[in-house]
Image (cartoon, rainbow, N blue to C red; front, top):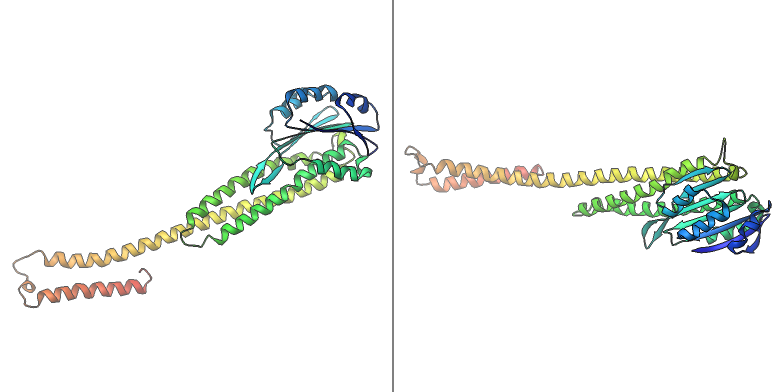
Amino acid sequence: MLINCVAYQNGQKLGDIPISEISEVISRSDCFVWVGLADATPEELEQMRVEFDLHELAVEDALVGHQRPKIEEYGDSLFAVMRPVELVDGEMQLGELAVFVGPNYVLSVRRESSHGFQDVRARCEREPELLRNGSGFVLYALMDAVVDRYLPVIEAMENELEIIEEKIFEKDAQRANIERLYELKRKVLRFKHAVSPLIETAGKLHGGRVPRAVSNCDEYFRDVYDHLYRINISIDAIRDTISTAIQVNLSMVAIDESEVNKRLAAWAAIFAVATAFAGIWGMNFEHMPELHWKYGYPVALATMVGTCLYLYRRFRKSGWL
């Protein structure tokens, strides 16, 4: 679906144009066209391929989707893929943004993303002195917007982790904690798959040899790289904390099981002594004088009860009961 197709000249917006006029506008050296598509159909991408002379392999990647973040050069043009991450009703949703960048055009194609990039276009149009840098600055603005949307996701993950950590030492909450920790770990892993490759992508756009289409925006992409690097560090810190929390939770489960085992062992020892006495006096040998003693029965019971009470007090004192 076509979102907008706008022509710019020397950083100033000329206005919306029909697709049929794209070829005429991009033929001027001081103009460029920015086209935005959402969930593009094969027919729309084929039309754009013809208008902008896009490489067929890049068009195929944009059509199929599910690409890892990357940047590829095709002559004087670039093909960049980013994975925007959004929070929808508290759930993390990964989208995809494919951007074709040439000397005088930008084509952005977003998929599976409910949040568009109209705010990025508005920001660029408010800064015509920066928009004069052309399509390279538009790619920076789109990449910067994607990276900025990572920050609320990081904050939400940190808050969720803090809530789980507060419940680690609660009784009878270990199973629920383990399930929530593993679910959070799965989210963090998906998030890292979106961020880590993008660091490598941003690194290709500043320092050393950079693609011609973005050669005048070196310092802007360096800023994006710095933000991605810090976000990646935060993700690694969350992963380490999750692993530690899982180990602590499993240790708490082991401690609880140990307490139960100690109680069972203590009671088993107490009843084992009583059983031993009963077994000895129940053998009915002929020469057991206490069996014929008048007070043998009460003394046997008293001995058994006394021994059991003594063991009970010892186990209580040692913390086993």
